[in-house]
Image 1 (cartoon, rainbow, N blue to C red):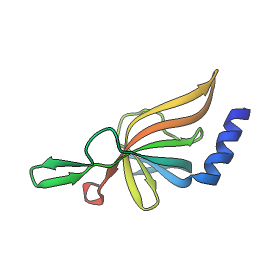
Image 2 (spheres, rainbow, N blue to C red):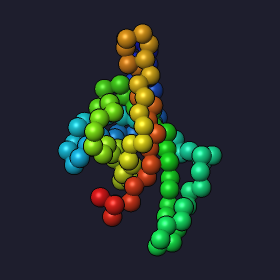
Image 3 (cartoon, helix red, strand yellow):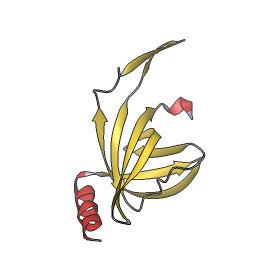
Length: 112
């Protein structure tokens, strides 16, 4: 598919390598472009122990990444950070998946 090839070339150039994990098992690796989302909600939210950082990202990932919605917790690891998958949507041209658009939430390591 031509569009998938263009996306793959661009994301390899401007993106970064990521790993997709589900329930502690590495499902696959590939390239994705992550972009911070600042206009959705406050970046710090109150908890019982004080403020907690809440960073969200939009991730545009290769079509070959295993990001299908499935039971269990899906994580994306990129650049030393870990993100929980909130939602994922396959962007398609006809029956062909071109890339993934994924909404991520930053996850602190002690939450693991």
